[in-house]
Length: 420
Ligand SMILES: [Zn+2]
Ligand SMILES: [Zn+2]
Image (cartoon, rainbow, N blue to C red; front, side):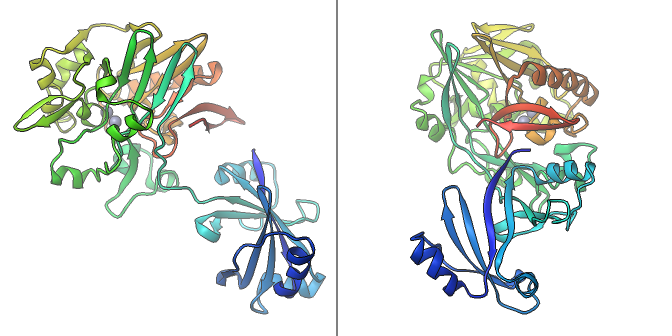
């Protein structure tokens, strides 16, 4: 467990009197007063580096702080440790028989989740564990060196898909803690293509949904592209014309819709200078759909590329360019593939819909959309083992918060150590 000291809570009879010491004598800055009606306290935070002292004054005689003052007088009431994964920490503590005041995390200030460890288990100290409220999404384009290559994580905005469909056989009470659904049961997802830069040129792996959807489709899929791929490319100093190659993991609209764009009545290639590299059998599947996959393949996303003679089809697993190789996973679609990016002994893997979000690192958490879920399971189990052992940097194309990280395992529990 990794924890940061968030604050030290100090019970005081009267905040204004306490300020005479903490503000005036010590000369520390004080934050604006805060009222926490549910705890019947008012608080003033005194920042000290990355942590704070929190002065707590009761506003009612039934508040825990009032009772504490009555019993023990003013003094240190609790310390608060901030953790990333409070559910994981609670499971870890319970497995070790640590006594907790509340076993289920409860809502703290500002949307945080908190659990208290009983003072008897913490040698006389009341320890509060807190998971800070997470932002809804984080789409921050970033470029960084990867051996002899450079990688740029970009995005094409956000969308939503049915939470049940995203987690297959996993019941909602389990997945909703990881991916809270909206009032139409959709969970928030990102579209995060990856740019690889090398001396042979610039490649983008997948390219988001693009701008061709009509109002009804945008509404169904909660498409939110106020900031989209053009903005993200500009953020890392690029534009569509800087791309030499577009590589598709598969041709679903949320991965390859951005390959083309409307120009008047026509649909044309979006990346004017680029060749489009596509697995031949995926092309066949996308152009010969059936009832089960038809909604995912939109002919306008790829047929105009063929008309413009910019498509390069290939048959088997292979190196696309030095340092970039594709491996067929099957499962999600018959020809779904992931991309290994290797340089100077380091391996990054763009896993596309094999592990669409960090929640999907659990073996059985497989999308209902997958055509061959048992194939997904077999490949994923093997791949995740390998990713943990060899420390692959894994890119999660649909995660709204985590663009990439290392999959780790401790005490049989898997988690992702976020890198960007
Ligand atoms: Zn897909
Ligand atoms: Zn997808």
